Image 1: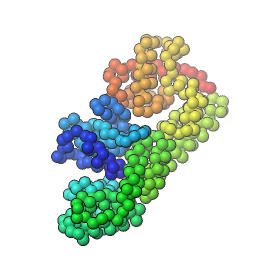
Image 2: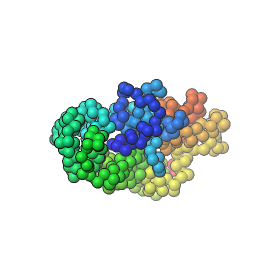
Image 3: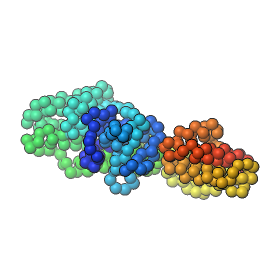
Image 4: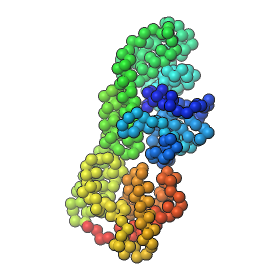
Length: 388
């Protein structure tokens, strides 16, 4: 989870007041239910994809938004806003509940910790671990005796030995806060542990972002860095399996595209395979190189320019309005994703797509109409060209 390091960093920067009660608690994982533009300092910043997940930093009910962390390519994460009605609680499992429970304990939200740890015990895979941790944590919260605090220190050391650094660190830091000056000394190499957990947490957050944008090459790099720091982190291992499977599919599309482009009249099939591959992995090096090699054909297939040949093929329409539609389509509709082959959808499907993405792209009705008019004309142009 991307919560361990982020909350202390961001909450100090966010405007007061924190809500006394909210639909989503700090640290809870949420999933985006529709494509939505996120904002930074009141301005459109970056699009979020349906299915993308974020840990909550804070909920602002007055503005109807959640503040979530976003990692730019370089530098520390920043807090960005997303509409609260564009997210839902992400599916839980025992591991996520264990981590959330110990992080709640660390942050002195003891009732929340009890709820998460109790729920973690319902997952058969983590039942034994939850059953061992829960009485130790809750018992220490109740008694705060030297013996229970010492038991927590020993438990944190055992968690690290078991290969769960993020659990160990949250428990050990929570013991500091629970015991205060009377807490026994830690048994962990805390600076090293904190660095490793920070690395895996950052890698996990960036992996989520990369996978949501289908940048699987980048995701694989982040997963490698995260697992080097925390080899047994379940979220990263799950992403690793998914990314490897999807990369294999992208490789197959790449091989198909390269094969088709070498045969007579194979260009349309090559472009289809190329598009399918880039939908799976948008930063696939070989697919991008192939796209560059086929740049002319790719442009003609995705967004043919409005020129004399275009107008001759269309035989009707206002060239200025169609050029405006082309500009909107190639600029505004690429803020969050690559262009598709213009004949890959029916016009009914295109109209639904443009309508559904208009809010995210900030398009008014007139601009949507210009885009639809351009796509309608462009389909005629593409379909009128002889196959190569």
